[in-house]
Length: 404
Length: 73
View (cartoon, rainbow over the protein chains, first blue to last red):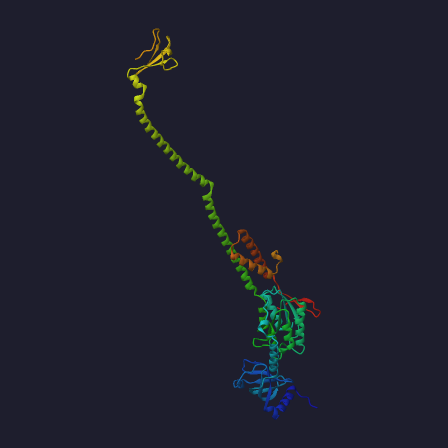
């Protein structure tokens, strides 16, 4: 027996590969998966079919000559040789040429399922439900161990910590993943009391994401009573789950962003609301003040005080008019009186007295004496002549009618 | 309902309606002032809810119960 060192035996194995004609010049058909272009320019990927997978590398010099860049899931025909990478003890396919092959099995399966669900109307835009504006509770279907879960928590607590999160833990890759994802969706619907559900998984190869192309998962998403947002893989990965979901986000973080409002914007709009309300109330008050001012002016015009002033003035005017009318009237009468006096003058007893007649009156009664009987002897008399009067007394003596 | 008892969603929605009503105008001063005061209280309440919120995370267990867990941040 001989004890070998690892390097020795690896070298030996490598020799076996390189001595084999089949392995040194071969065409291999399979589906590309996990295509990774490194900054060095070399490309690493996996070629697989239903039974097996093989690691592949294309050196930079060959990469430059490729006619196309395959995507994960593309079926290709690759040419090259197989040898051993001693550092890791693995064998790999050193590819120097790529051709498109008929679509790979996975791509075929994807298309088949997509067409089937499409025919049932599950991919219709009209089925997509709007997300709640302010979700109270969000369900998250993902692996608690994954980066997706951390990303989602980080985004939610930064962006809208008011939301409550209910994690429905599940495997997100492997054989059991589809059934677990379906169960997680169903139990959230049953007892999560959530307003929306995020189904998420971080980036990975097409194989890693395959659970999200499972028909059972697609149907569970379609059957969810609340809107479902998918955030599976990277920007470029589109799965059947994405197509069925109410909203497809390019990544788990983006799914969390889309699921909730931004509290910074909410704060902003709260301050805006305060400003708007303050402006509205200022306008209302200014308006009321202007109305009050108008009313006050009107009231002032209508007040009893101004009525009194107005009436006082009108009264003054009337008094003045009355005085004027009075004066006019007096003047008129004075004039008329003077006229009458003129006419009266010739009729006055004075004129008669001037002519030498005397007026005899009893004294002290001053009754005009018209008859001798009114002046019996001894009767005191007053005799008026033109320039005055003097007392007298009736004498004894003959009396009788006499004409002058 | 007193603003302390409103959910953020209800408070925010009421605030939006109220701002629109105030902007529309045609209210008595008493109504305007009442709406304004209510609106200010709602805005304060909503902002306070945002300020004080901390992400609560629960995990759904096999028996359908939800257990509080620490958020992964």
